[in-house]
Length: 380
Image: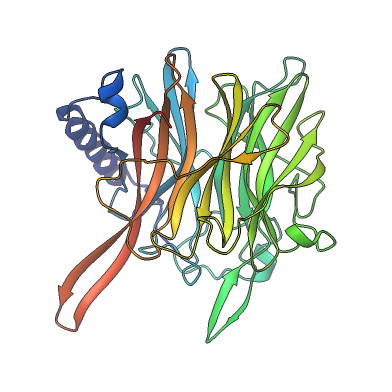
C-alpha cells in the first residue's frame, strides 16, 4: 500500500510540488473564448505527485463544480504505477481549487476528502477488514447541491470497492461488486459518509437479480430534478458495461429505471461497452456524454447521445475530439467525467487520460502507465 504523507516533510514537499505545477501551468498561454479556443489542444491541469503519497502515480476521474465564481475539482488518486484489472490499489478522492479552471491548488494538508479504510504499511487486507463496500476505494464522484429542505448543502455520490474479485483465467482476476455510496457536506470540503441500505453501506448496489447489473454498478452522475434526484450510472453484467438510470425522492433511497443506453452493433465505436455517463443541458437539448469502447483503434472514445426530454436517447455520429496532445496507444483509457457548458454554448471538458511511460533498463524495456488530468474547450 502507498504510504500516506503524515510527516511535515511530506507536506512541505507536496506544497513545493504544487507550487511548481502551478508555475508551469501559468507559463502556458490560456485559450481565450471564441473559435480559436475551441480548436486549442488539451492541456494538462493536474499531475501525480511522484513521491510516496496517496496520489503518487495517478490522478483521474475529475469532477468539477463552479462555486461562487471559482472552481472545485474532486478527483481520484492512487499510488500504483498501473491502472488495470491486474493491479489493485486504493483509490481516494481529493480536492483542488482554482480561480479560473486552469491553475489548480491542493489544500495545505494535502489529505483526501474521501477515502476507504486507512491501512498502514504492511497491513493485510483480510476479509474481516472489508466489511464496508468502500473498504479499499472511494472514487469516481458526482457532487450535487442538495434540495433546500435537506440537512446538508452538498451530496457526493461515489464508487466504492472492497476488494472483491473473480477469476478471469490464466492467473488473472477482475474486480467486481462495485457499489455506489453517498457522503454529505455543509461546505463541500468536509464530508461525512452516509449509511445506505443497498448492501454493506451503499445506497445503490449491484443486483444479481437484474441481469444488466448483476456484477457491479459505479461511476454515478446525479442531477436535481425538482425536489428529487436522477442518477445515471454504469452497470456491469460480467461481460459488458451499459448505462443505467435510477430516481430518488430524498437522495438516499433509489429506484432503478433499467438500462437507458445499450452498446452499439459489431462495428460501432461502443460495440464493446458504454461507461462513464455525464448528462448536461445545452442549446435546448439534453446530452449524455459517455466513454465508448470499440474493436477498432483507438479502443476508447468519448461519445454523445442526444435527447429532447432526458429519457429517450439517440446516439450522435462521431466521437468528441478532445484534441489530445498525443494519440492514445493500445488499450490506454480515457475518462471524461466533467463537462461544463460555457455562456456561448461551448463545452469545457475535464478528463483524465492514461499515458504509457517507457524506459530502458539492464533487463530490457520497462513499461508503466499512469493518469493525468487535462482540460479542453470544445464545441461538438
